[in-house]
Length: 208
Image 1: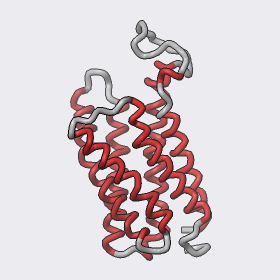
Image 2 (image 1 turned 180 degrees about the horizontal axis):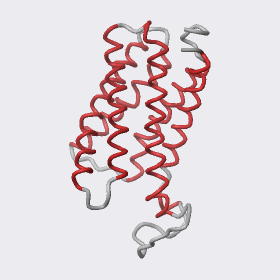
Image 3 (image 1 turned 180 degrees about the vertical axis):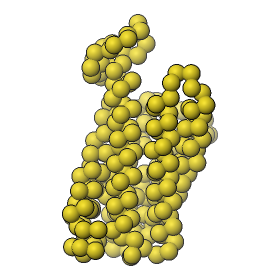
Image 4 (image 1 turned 90 degrees about the vertical axis):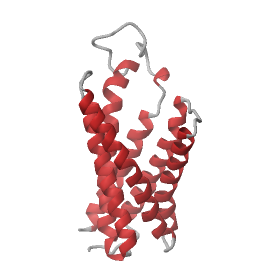
């Protein structure tokens, strides 16, 4: 795969970070009508209800797809230099990311009364999230042991924080809607760092 392809994957990851950050903007900051107001069949574009129903689902799906493409490009670029264990973690992370994308597609396209589709999506997420957390953690740890500490920190940081947030949630600690930033901002940061690494293409020859 040529260097040009990696350079294209870098900005795509940066775009995924932008998509995620837009989804983190509280609905209260978007114009009315807002969720909870009288029912609106055709909400105005960029109103809070339109953002909730249309913009956020589209951005979340796009971000998942772009992250999957970007991580796939990173794995393809570095796979010859990865140890067998690190490669296994990387494949686990990629499989989990792809499964998460599938679950997101199922959930966001499910009709109001399609309980079976929603439960399938939740089951997929339940399987995908541990794979992503463990996979990214192991993948990043391998970079931390090499000379790619920045890349390793970017890959290990979000899953460690996600595991902490999930653990606290299970323990009964509640998070406000703004608590989503604890997951979105680090994930966006990971996308930016990995995207920059692919753009500069520091870890590969000009053509592999």
